[in-house]
Each structure stands twice: as C-alpha cells, then as structure tokens.
Image 1 (tube, rainbow, N blue to C red):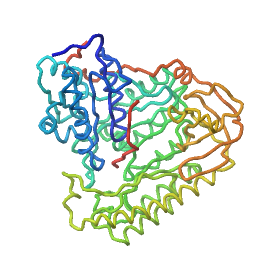
Image 2 (tube, rainbow, N blue to C red; image 1 turned 30 degrees about the vertical axis):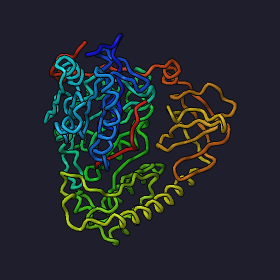
Image 3 (cartoon, one colour; image 1 turned 60 degrees about the vertical axis):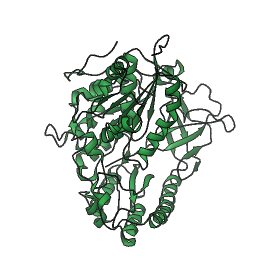
Image 4 (cartoon, rainbow, N blue to C red; image 1 turned 90 degrees about the vertical axis):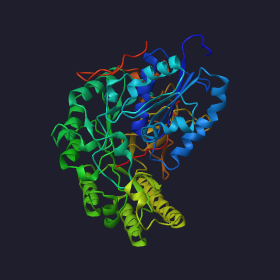
Length: 495
C-alpha cells in the first residue's frame, strides 16, 4: 500500500436536498476533526459521495461517477472512496458488489462512524459496510465545516412519520426524532456568535416538530424563541407539511421580527383524488385555506411549493385542478417534477401509470403557468425597497454589468447594481429599489440606498467559514472513538 506525505485530503460530493447539504457539512467537520484537510482539486485522498435516492436516475448517476473514479483508484490504491446518504441506506452492500473499488459504505444513521470506518478499511485493506437501522447520534451533535459565513442550516428533527405513496425517504431516514429546544437554540446561538446572520431550520416534516415529546405547539414556540437571539437577523424553515400547519405557526411568523415572510409549502397536486392516492392527508380547500391565512397575516409573504406531474392515475381533469391551484395560490416559485417510479414505494406498483409523453406535455403546460404566475408576482414588486443579503456564488461582481447578487428577506434572488459603493462582500447587507422583474429574479439597477458591513462579511473577506463543534447538551457521544465547493441539486422536498 502506498502512503501519502502530509495530512490526508478529502472532498465531499453532495446530491439531493437541504438535509443532505447539512449532513455534508457534518461529514466535512468530522473529517477535519480527524486531521483531514479539504482538497480544492480532484486529487483528494478521500472522496465521499453523499447520495440521494429520491431523484430520478440517482443510481445511474452514482455508479457513473464511481466508474469515472475507478482508473484513479487503480492508479492510486491508497485513495479511498466512501458512499453515504439515502442511496447507501437503500442499496447497502450492493454498492460494493457493483463497484468493488469502493472502500466504505455508511448509512444515514451513522455519519459519525465515517472517520473510524475509513481507518479500519485502510488497516484491513478491505471494504467496510455499516448501515444502522436507527439513529446512533443526532447529526447536529457532530462537528461541522460550514459552507457559509452568513447562513447556516440547523436540523431540528430527522426522519418522517408520514407514508406518502411516492416517497422512499421514511424508510431511509427512519421515524421522526426531535431535538430538544434547548439544544437547537444553543446551536443557533453558537452560529450567531460566529457571525451568522441567517439560519434555516431543517426537518423532513419541520412543522410536526414536537411530536416526539408531546407538544404540538412546539414549532411555533421555537420560532418565537429564535426571535429573542440577539444578532440573528433572518430565520427560515423547510419543509412544512400542510396537514401540520397550524394557526399558531402563522402567528409566530407574523409576530416575530426576524422570521422571514417566506414559506415553502409542498402542494404536490391540486386534485383531491390524486392527493388521496398519494396518501397526502389534506385536500385542495385545506391547502388554499392555509395560504389565505398566511397572506392575511403577512400580505408580503412569498410562497413557494413543490408539484409532481403525472402521478399514477392522474387524469386531464386532475391536472387542470393543479393548474387552477397554481393560479389561485400565486406562487413566487415552484419546484416541478415529472413523476417517475421509485422502487420500494407503493406508487411504483400502482395501475394507470401515465405515459411519458403525456407527463412531458403536462409538465410543459405547468411550467408555462408557473412562469406566468411567478413573473406577475415579481412584477408587482417593481419600485419597492428590498433588503438584500449578499450571497456567496451569487455575490460575485459581474464586471460587465457592475451587478452583485443576493437574497431578499422573502427569499427572492436579486441582482443589484453596486453604483458608487465599493467593498461589498458576501455576508453584507444592502438596501436597494427593484427596477425590473423577470420570472426567476429581480433587478435593482439604481444606486443602492445603503450598505451595511457585517461580521459575516468580515469573516468571508478573511477566508473564514464557521467550523462549529457539536452541540451535545446531554446527547450521547459517538459510538466509536474518532481517529485523531459543495455541488448540490436544487431543493428536493419530500413533504
């Protein structure tokens, strides 16, 4: 076996939803705590794939990427390849059978074991496969290498108790496990102490938070508690389930100044018949009723959603109802998906699978209505003042246009002119006026009204990303003692 001089390097490649992105921050934090150094190029000593099983062709994508790495592995035997995440939880030992050059396979419940498994695989010169059936350590108790100086993910629960017929996630992530409020708030406070301005509370079914310890109002209380944290400017959450959306949460959003008036609430279908077949425990009237209440309390709220086209048995009439709901709901954005069967889900074996050509045609019509709606919603904002949190990636200055980019409080993407202002950094806050609207973004071409430098901007300028330790607060320690740019897909909500 060859050896590598100096500390071993690593690279994490992430696919899937926000939960996977958050898990990858924990994977990076664990590896750095074990002495690994992040590689900026593709010559890492350890490559970790954090996988998704929800997306279409997820299997092909993983095995294609593993195939591309095989020649490198043959050339550098000391290199290690690890596969984790939802696809690893599903395929288990099959991954090593199909790709025997993989060194480690770990599941969604034992992220904390990765450094030890890598060490064992090197020592024993054979693959290590460990898939636990239940959570060993809550991910947020583990150290993290945060990807942003100004924004952070905070997991409040993992797993899901729903049984949607199209979704494989509950079988891969397990039943819902909730963190105690004190642990969550301690992590948020630690992030704010690092300069973070914005947190997003994460859960597979975020607004059912509290079910495990018997408090159905716990999520609204948690939002209000975030409002008391000094220095925390923006609070978001994703993704809620309509069946659990209660009036106290709407009140907490409206009455807590740092909770953003943005809501991502999956619709999936506007047809009651399809919702029933999906085993979604709400109907069109209930969904639109929630939106009406949100807009009554927060007229400026931006509401986004997820929609599946072509679910088994969907008729033209069912699809027309989805279009009607899109028009009534006035979404500011929508993640739209063409249904495709997922092995292991009830929907995959249902009769009346919709032909691919029909799904494609409906999808195109849906996209037309979504774009028409989102453009109208954005055009209504022309002339209004917006507060923009300058974003990494989105925050690079375009030398041709003189624009930078960031996110408004309602989550919309804003491209803004810097005018005579110099020294704007990702993490800083700019106030400007919307001059033009497109379906997917806003432009502000005039002189900014103000620019506020922040500690997050200072950290970005210094090249520092927060590396937060795990917040244990009585949580169990990792089962085994540790050995001393994330590419992502768009949001993939499963609710």
